[in-house]
Length: 156
Image 1 (cartoon, one colour):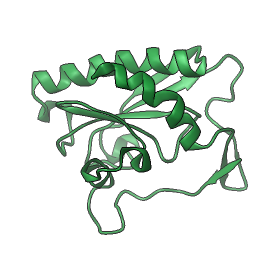
Image 2 (cartoon, helix red, strand yellow):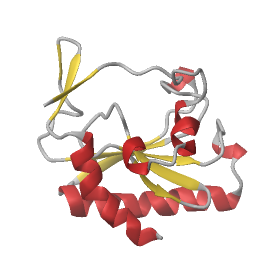
Image 3 (cartoon, one colour):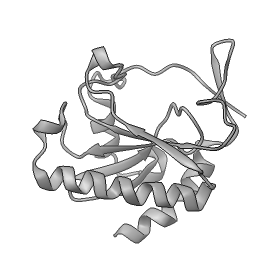
Image 4 (cartoon, helix red, strand yellow):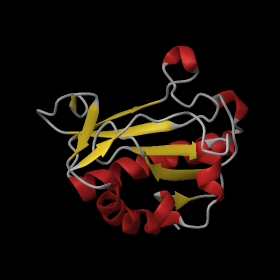
């Protein structure tokens, strides 16, 4: 099992962790599942549940109003596809989909808007259990990536 520590809102160089991941060429090492014209999709490095995916605009924006209609349209079209892919690959029975816009709303990384897609199953514990401050995942991120990436390749 994999143990996770808490995350910060900046990368080691002080920049936006999401922008830095997008700038990398190594999609697998960055857990980038898909790159679109306006949107990219990544596995959450600190997931609430196995299969927790983040959808983000390619540009560093803080609010939905900072995006133009085409950018918002792609984000939500990809969200629809994502729920189908995660259902197919992981047998999800439902989803929590949402955004925490701003620090007051609970955003851990408030400067770069991101949409959470969290798979759920009947009888799960409302996100993964925390024991002694450590989160335990039943599946390694690389294994989840290997299941989902081929499905996202169909969006190309």
